[in-house]
Image (cartoon, rainbow, N blue to C red; front, side, top):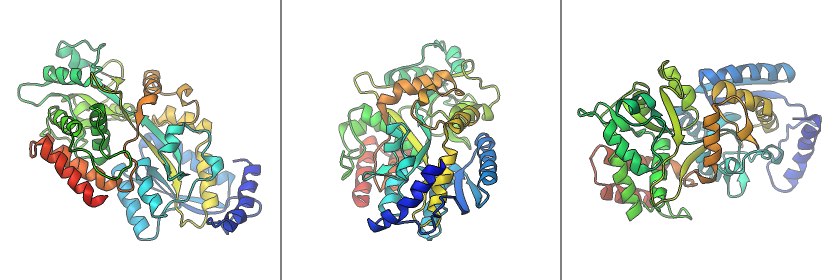
Length: 413
């Protein structure tokens, strides 16, 4: 952030106060950031190689700022943030999933992003961090889903590794040929028991069948329809819910038990850490998300963003730190070293990631779908996971699971 922008931001504070917005009384007239920032984020070894040197460089350059990071497993970050907000002691800066923004923003937990920071990004990514017309974060990890598949398993089953399935009908057909008699090896394996991934997986199927999970205005659930029931029936017909691995379908795919998996860009960095033999383009490969023969293309997408707590007493410094992390040169390094895509304008041309992966994402971008934008996302995701898991394990019929989902959402909405 230039000195001119810093001074402008400081000068804007009293104007915001006069207009009824929350000002930053501590914003210094000279625009220099000061204070100790608490920063929460999910962490990977690869991203640490980017983030830690950046923090050290930042605190050397801005000596009146301290940065205290707390690294939290990704599966626990949303829950820990919710607990911190409920207890009234959130961190100043944190990573936040775009899907949780409506719920936090509605309760006044998030500080709106400074206008100067929300420009220069892919519009779809910014929209995913927006609620009721206000932007509440800047995007730092953007992905559209792919179909991952094991080339070696395809070859063993007599399938051409250079011709992955392009439709869900083909996925089902290939899965039959890739499933062993004892069920220990399967074709496509869903990521079960995970709310975020359940929403994305079923989103592709329900919307691909022409339906919706929630009505367009978000006022009611709409799974108990022909499209919703058909999607759940298809969901139940693939994979083997009895197969287990500490890392869910990721571990099953890495170990060769699953031949196909729906996931995002980050998995290209994750999979080789689970199995050193997994070389992209040789042992496994990626393809665009399938679509139903007679349905629209639906590509589930998500964005993580950097956000600031409304209660932070050093919001000026918090946004300054975020701006420092989001520079174009950092975006390129983050993609190259950690496989994490910052969706700056022109991200399609960033170097460092697998070109095939970026090209598929660029071609899929017009069909990106971030799912229902609702303040009760957590409740919706849990109810949808219950429905998906119930049909996958054969505990409920698709019809009953769809009705139960709609009933659960009637209470939540």
